[in-house]
Length: 352
Image (tube, rainbow, N blue to C red; front, side, top):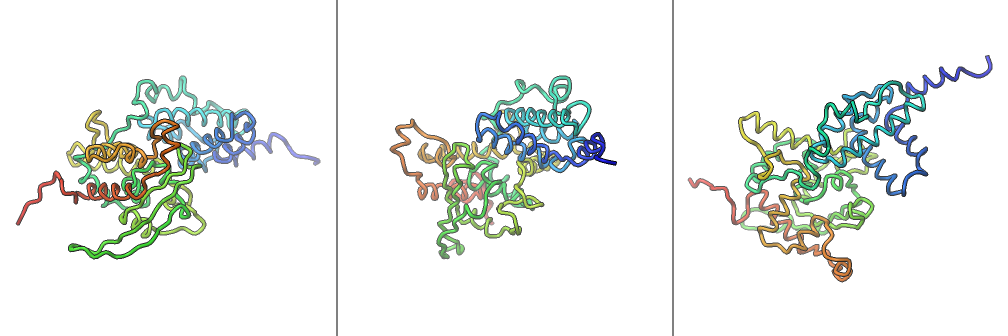
């Protein structure tokens, strides 16, 4: 028989198209419609960050509403704007897959009359920018509890806390961004500590503000990196089980499980002192910012540590320094506060 059965061939193709493959094909088809290459990268980045860990290897013909909930529920309350964009982008990909013959039936990412019946309206949930932060009074206990957690995601959360960095910056970190610098053992009256000039340089392409950002690494932060295993073929410092980048949900899950353990033990847990919601990873940046303000650190220095823009365009043009070494001292004090080793510690230590 000359030629094949087009219907059979299409069914066979549909039986092998995964979500990740569908995303790449969709983007290649629609590339000319994007406003810019940056817009295309944003699409690919959000789908890789939130969609792929849940259903990247799943056939588009088998994706269900439950899969969509697994993608969206962890970020719907805390990253509402991002979550709505992810939902819409997945809907577009699955809509294309349906028209192209790779799946049939309703689109599980559709909002009206579908996910709208399960998830609260975006306008009714917390707005971005006010993510639940950890109360300063809870920091020491939370830090000790985190130290008892094992796994790559827990280590990533520790590093994120020590550096006050964003989740995406930490999860996307590669070994070539790290300069461990010069090290020397310094003997103190209590213990031998490691002095280091280690620095993490995040390229502009990975920064929210589109500018290169240098992060001074304390000995504690550098030690986490030095003690991490490395996976052959993976450039990522905090790698996922298969070698790719950790998902945002994996780090959030660590904090969620810590909160669940507290509640199970009959305690309130780690709540934002204002809205009484459980603290989330991004909220740790707010905790750091509050601490820096209360300790009297210069506003600009604290804002630079968070990779925020400061001043007007003219002021930024004249302010060329990123205060790296001054920030190194500030981050060392932050580590001391996390460990409750600062001079002013709210904990009362019983004397023998």
